[in-house]
Image (cartoon, rainbow, N blue to C red; front, side):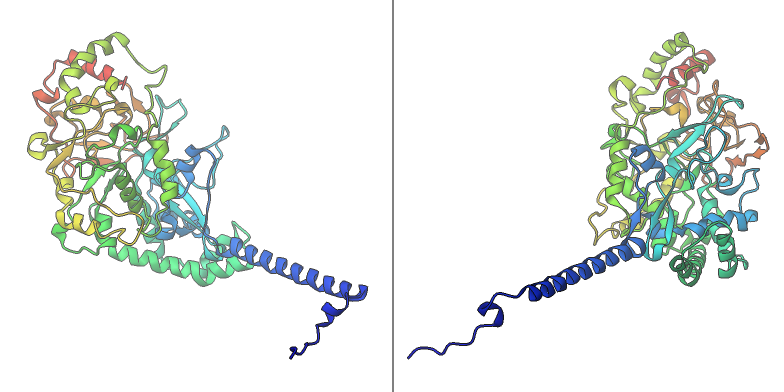
Length: 514
């Protein structure tokens, strides 16, 4: 018995009429255009209001100076709040003759007429987040770019990878916290200040008024409450307490014995390739350059989840072979005297600090010298504890990275001396202003000196340290009698402090060539 036949649909029995085809095609076009419109609107809303969009730069040098490492989501400040704070609260900045964020020692690049080339100083990055609110955060350059000049008449030379010897990073955080504590830090006052500088669109205005301003104040007050102990023993200009912020903010330490001051001089970060496998940080507590960089990124404000490993990797690759600055052409230099200093360097310095022709490798380069032998201030060494190390290992557990190489040591690490002339002041805590003073016994080193000048002493090899001010700008005083700031150690026959003056002069001249 044959199966019953079902009637065919209309479109299978007869071809569509021209009118029907027109109606069908018009519906399809409308559906396609509607789809495109919805997709375009979704993309517009996403990229304008929802996407995480950091500012990137073609030149790696600009990426280093102004690019993101992920600190904005961790501890960033909404851009327009950050922009108006120095105008609203100048009394909370250091009173040193400078204005804005330059008063805190940040480097501002300028054109020939003295106008800023960028909308932030070097060391600040911008990253747009939800609601079109752009956040400002710190990056590696904040602590590792500085300026120098041979005399007051010279223009400052911006140098990448150089220790930021004029920066007072703790005072930057203190400034933000003091602003948040000021009763004038209100939504209405901040919006009025922002309106004088910018025209925000309605979404931005809503985001700033309802979320960004109140949340920023709340977060800064919370950080200020947890970090109060940092300000009891301030690090000062050109230095930072590397691990105490971790202890207070990441891990909630409160025991004073576990919060010893560990203030250290900011280091140079050029020529990282030769440092691979060496014991890094001042106390040599890690042998991984990559881990050291992640740790520094968290120290700059990134969180374990926000740190931008891809952008950090770009900077790492560039720093791997970034050369140190050469002694400037036209500055004082006696080639014959430097030649006489070379064998003195080989005898007294090369074993611990390496030779330039051997990429600063040597038997003791990058190894730790016991504190009893080196004799320098022990507080930074004491501040890094096994307990803290164990807490560090809890970071990054659920991320693509995790610490493995941190270790507690018993002294301070010998470092390569590439570009040593540009790394003043000296010793791990920045307690000796010049290399000439480092070649003197501790009793002859200045117990008090001024820091933050950018004029270089071409004879003593360090920044000018005796003047309290220059051109209306004042310089703070370093006091080597404070806890953690002793200028003792690295002295005696093995360290060249007993050399005749002629030999010291020759050695200093040779150090200009490194």
